[in-house]
Length: 327
Ligand code: AMP
Ligand code: MG
Image (cartoon, rainbow, N blue to C red):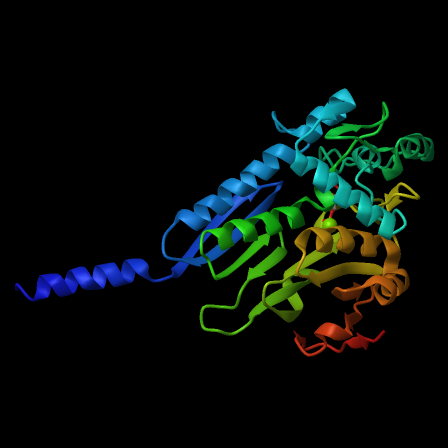
């Protein structure tokens, strides 16, 4: 018995030091999020969860302490360095994508009911009036002070989950985590490799059937972020209207794309770009990728065709046919 007790102690100590799988499902930023973290204790995953809620509170449109809410209400606000940096990043994505991405589309998205869920088809006059107040170039960024015109509103929903995934990765790394995968409403971010040393396989949803995958992409330290009309939409009189708005028309972007997945180390950029490239459509998106792209992407068209950029041709796996796009 005297020998057994130290052995039990040793086992407990060794087990306590081993990284084991820790999972958590949370609801934040209007979506379900799944966190899987391999760590020695619960601290890292708890810190990741707290970080997501902090960002949600800071950047959401309705949070009591949200700097975005205060800015939208007061039209001028002193914001934190963090909020200022994210707005600058969003404006830079707008500039790069000729305004396909625009964090001031809120007056239009609200008109269609995508914010409060009261879906409706607005009149052309209403759309034209709302279009007057949108335009990223209307955002004035001073030293921590942001101002916007009277009817303009900011919504970082098109970039916020990617930003949150980057911050979560930083938090996990600073907690010593070497292996993790998080899915923030289908926007996936991977840290390191799987605990068995293999790469992560990230599934890409079939826009025609959310319960199926069109394929998987292997990833290590990468964000895999998808924008798709199938993620939030309503139907009226046989027409489907979805939540990704073309800032030039004030209507759901209609260009024969069903989804765009961007794969890159930078989750914030991937999120902004996936929304922008969805607005641009396949030809515009491929042109952008050829000129600008340090990233990779998977495109699914409305008629079910799959296009994959050459950088991930080897790591993309699908039972369906797909075309590899070259530069
Ligand atoms: P995502 O799922 O990242 O493509 O973002 C879609 C969300 O971003 C929408 O629910 C809107 O809140 C917002 N949004 C819609 N259209 C745009 C756009 N063209 N640029 C930036 N944000 C947009
Ligand atoms: Mg996005």
